[in-house]
Length: 148
Image 1: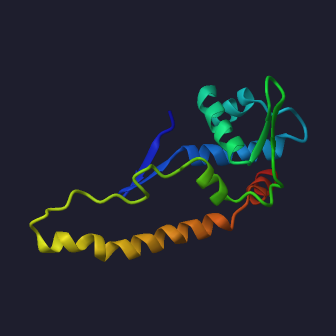
Image 2: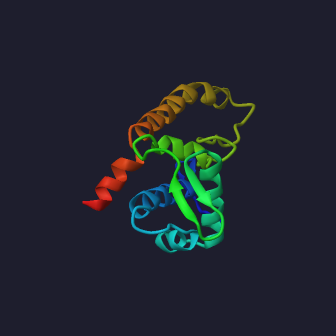
């Protein structure tokens, strides 16, 4: 199972970085060889079952094509069209409770009752900033850097 990275209340699943790795590997290797889940699992250094689940999520999201058996995986779209935000969304990188988590607030404390209101806009803005940055980087950008 993928790990959860927790930073100051934010939880981002390692599925995101693993999925980006998988897509860049497919992009770099698909011209020269058949890209299989075994090959991807070795590159990512992850359990093949985890990689197959990721591959299924990427396929369901329309980011890759997969031929059953040993047919391999290919990108379903040009690498210039697949952004990191697409990957982030495809693998549900944020848990179901959202990106930021509040501790349980004291219902009897006036300050505590205002914390959501005080922080919600700032936290929403920071999350949208993350989305904007991810939307500007493509798999092609990363693959090009790998190949240099």
